[in-house]
Image (spheres, helix red, strand yellow):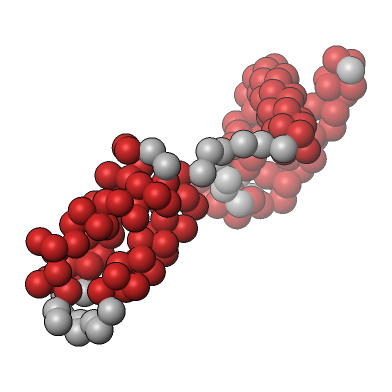
Length: 157
């Protein structure tokens, strides 16, 4: 007997088994729908015991359905971790604001090099080519700018 031949006779049975597994009408309808679609995809199989096969399909579908629809809950450890990650993000953003403000206070000669190196991600060689300045000069300006920023940030702390 082919699975597709069973549907008119077993649709009610599928629903009843789903209702027994899920205990709610809405969940049973969802699960029965999933099971029927699954059975339709496998309609070319021959089966000898339709009731057992349907029960097995419903059970497997219910396990998968339960995994997908399980309520999300966080443990106390997860909540604490999320709290600290959020706090770290806030602190990091605040530090970034302070650093960017300090960079803006640098003389233009240094500010331009710092922005290209740290904020745009260009290398020393690329900055030198872009500005038409030797690589050593770029390195020296970065060194001096970092020292100026250290002094500025030390005063803020």
